[in-house]
Image 1 (tube, rainbow, N blue to C red):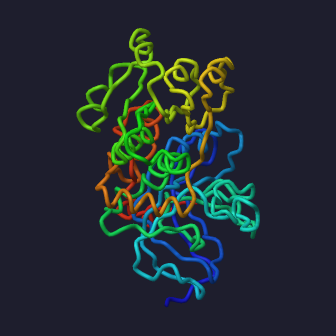
Image 2 (cartoon, helix red, strand yellow; image 1 turned 135 degrees about the vertical axis):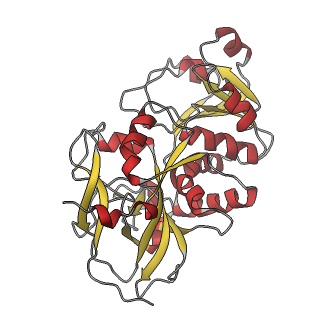
Image 3 (cartoon, rainbow, N blue to C red; image 1 turned 30 degrees about the horizontal axis):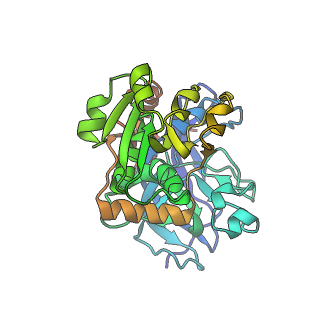
Length: 361
């Protein structure tokens, strides 16, 4: 067992202001403790939430900010009380790195709903040290908030699953939608949406992709294996599909009307919101009343669900569709992501980016 040093100097790529532009940044990791592990970061996924945080879209950003919450790497040191991992293990870290451990959600193992949750970045630990994310050479995390990456999953493939994968897996599990034979739809075919198609199909569902244009029809049907494709502006096709779906996973991270999609749900159907939208959504109440429909939302998944999802993906051979880039391309990657010019997830090769050679204050 390696001995933990009190602090470590690392290099990450940070934004200094709401422009969101990232550049090299040197800082010290928080002090490590007996429950902590130190991770050498190999890969980190790029999520649309990173854009919201980097550009202060939600009005809560603090700078300098090192983003990244789909982190995969190797354990290089472990604390004296760590039982879950050993040096050399390949592990992952997602969006949450702390919770109170005493509230109802924490005691129910749904710590992502703890009101005192600590985000992987743009937050502070209980000791007051800022949290910084996975666009960095190393990070320190409490063993509770890390998961083991199955050997059958390539590390670069596992990274997007830590957010996009578990975001769609969690509601399917929680709302009893894992059983085969259901008819579901994925609204929005981006980084989260494409994993929704793959996971729902692996559960034995008939899956429809709903999009605003015909642009992704071939991708959805021929490459991802969706069963149907529906263009939301095609009124006649939307009417034909009325009352046909058990659920809709709404992954769109922008303001949009709900009424057209609510009409697609059967009685007791559910639309699950999972895109971060800063504007209020609107709908007319009869759209839910007359079908006993539900509008609900879920947020990532618990550590238990995350580990379960990884094992599910490994068993089913599921892979995310990724484009691997080096850190010096990350600003361009973020611009392309904001323009929806990616198929479907960027993953940064952090270990191969020689961060320590690009150190800056």
